[in-house]
Image 1 (spheres, rainbow, N blue to C red):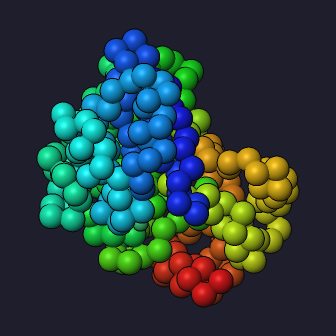
Image 2 (spheres, rainbow, N blue to C red):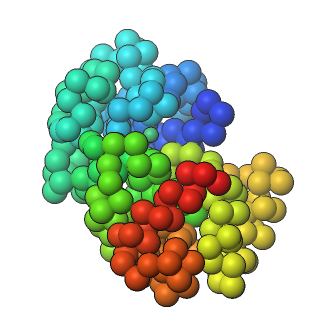
Image 3 (cartoon, protein in one colour):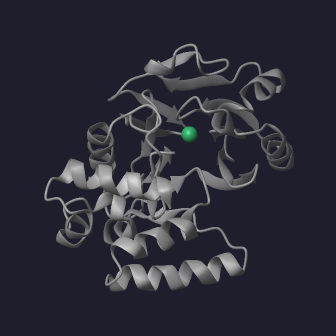
Length: 257
Ligand SMILES: [Zn+2]
């Protein structure tokens, strides 16, 4: 399974999963159809699945148009998103599995950004290889999604599920927000050397117009304050020793940043 990253709208990423052997593809969160159709055409592959993480238009905006061209493609989304994802046919819950290219992905229910958000995790197909996590707007490189329909407690539970995956997991989040996220992270965790180093790297990448997605889960655990609600430094900065309260205050502060 090859993974292609297609930039869309102002800062979205659409991910195209491609299986050259069977000449099929699946797409994760098609914000728009155009770049997907162009890539499918270029690669000469047929779209068989649309994996949506949540109902926001910059994640499902391309569904209808893609279905016009590939009416047999199956549209997957969370069971709680029923009625909100165009063309949805499969209603996934925690523990469900989906298949593509001989790989099986686990579905995680990760509410917080929205009440129905799910994530897809493809475990490694060979020992030593990384797993691939498609987490939509739940976990970002250096940050996390806003809480539009969920509570800090829900988001902490959701992020805990993702944080528990192997360190070498590749995190394919849906937006290029990394630089701004790390700028914020430095305001609450300024002495973290891993964070300082990552900020320098990301600054360079962005100056060269390079994508910072995917990132490594190990890096997120070291530098992303939204996975570090147990860190004494972050807790001190937020004036709380309670993980959920620490997370909630952190999210509130970021909303104003
Ligand atoms: Zn969203």
